[in-house]
Structure formats: structure tokens, C-alpha cells
Length: 98
Image (cartoon, rainbow, N blue to C red; front, top):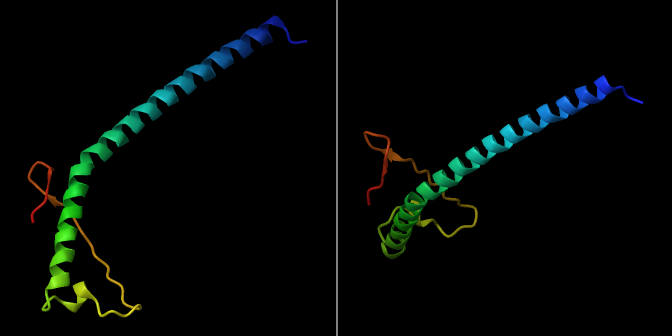
């Protein structure tokens, strides 16, 4: 049977572990909140990018002079890889131009 000192050490150890766990939960909650805020802030940019890509797609379908890279050749072996980057303003805000 454990002694009284062993029991006290075990109790203090469990309390310390509880404090560490609580701190870790608070950090995780803060990171999750920050990630959710970032996702919500990026939503208008994603919607604008979707709009730009839809306009680009609509323009290439009707345009007979559109580049083959955008229209494609109709072969299944051809793939289009499109890269997009952010146009950052002076203060770090993202701007989109159509």
C-alpha cells in the first residue's frame, strides 16, 4: 500500500498534468479560432477567383481565336495546368483585378 507521501506526490502530479492539459486545450482553441478567421477572411478572395475563372472559361469557349493552351485540343491526353498568385498591395492586403 502506498504511503501518504506517495499519495500526495501522485495527487500533485495529476494536478500538474491537468494544468498542462488545460493550457494545451486553450492554445489549440486559439489556433482553431485563428484558422477559422483566416478561412472566413479568404472566402471573398476565393469567390472573386471563382468569378475570374468562370469569365476566363466563358471567354475561351466562344472565342475561335483563343489559345490552344486555354481551349485544349479535345484529346484526353492533354491537361491544363493553371497557376495563380496573389497580387499583394502595399499593406499586405490582397487585391484582385479583372
